[in-house]
Image: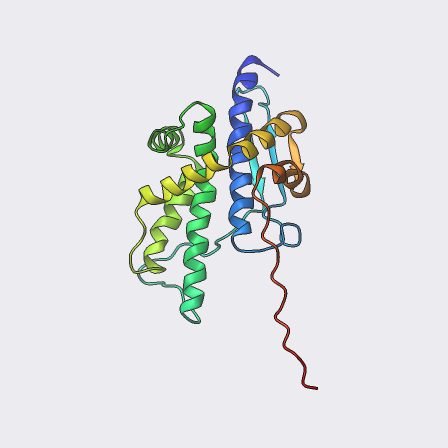
Length: 210
């Protein structure tokens, strides 16, 4: 591994760990079983192949699949509940996209949410993370009467990253050693750093007539 890779790979590890931890945290807001419906399939980083570039990715994390809405092609919803779920999934997808750059900024020492957002935007504005986030943000106008301000979504992302920083650091440290982790491995690493899952509420039992 060359010197450039040694310097950049920890940032990449925190970037991908940010995506992965955000996916787990956001997934828990929708489902009560981490393993039956995994938040992603794997998270990986890789050193450069001689060109000074490092990379990584989280495979299989999707909250929101609709894309490319225009004023002529609006989504069709079965009911208001359907619209509500797709709206929430779209916002969660934006947060998951931004969590990587935000975690990288936190690793670089930007811990104030405003500074974190500015640094993440400056360093990643043309990246696929920001391109996907901005596209979905544009589509929110078809999903809700008034979109939340972009700054509110940035603040939500920064809070998620800061509140779960120990989980991100733990996962990044393991990625720097193993480079590729399946979901179950990643969950085992971060679970001790996350709030416990709420206990499932048993179904209400009604007394049977005598």
